Length: 210
Image (cartoon, rainbow, N blue to C red; front, side, top):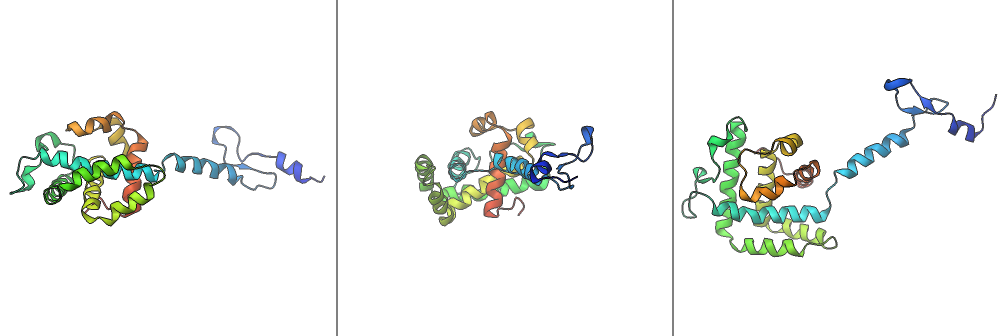
């Protein structure tokens, strides 16, 4: 019995019947990879982050650093790790001690940048308002080209990933110490939001660990 090309396309069936069926194959046992790749592409596209969102996240986080700095318990003349606005007592059971100390160090570094470059608060706010889909790539280049602005954004993204190391910790649990600036973020806590930060860190090679 001979089969035409059209016959072979129609003769498809699972490798195994029932719930344990494998990938679909044709009459000659060739896996229908197209369907598998379609599923993979769908998952990947779901968690992609547009240039516009990247730019807005980086600028928003950099700008919010000034708010957190203003809530510190120390002063610009004498910045210390203990000046963090976070209450260590509320962190019990939530952080690895190494991660917590790393966060304090990053907060201190960001506070010093804010002290030395107060003009960045207004600048990041204006840049955020100017971001569009069309100019997002150019804005990202501007952020990366300005060391202090880039460092504020990098610190904020790193702290976020230390606070929420997994998507479950962000979507389901949140954080015991929710600052005023976190309210909007936690109201919009979803897998895509968390993945945006991961994508940014991976694209720019920003490691969570020192």
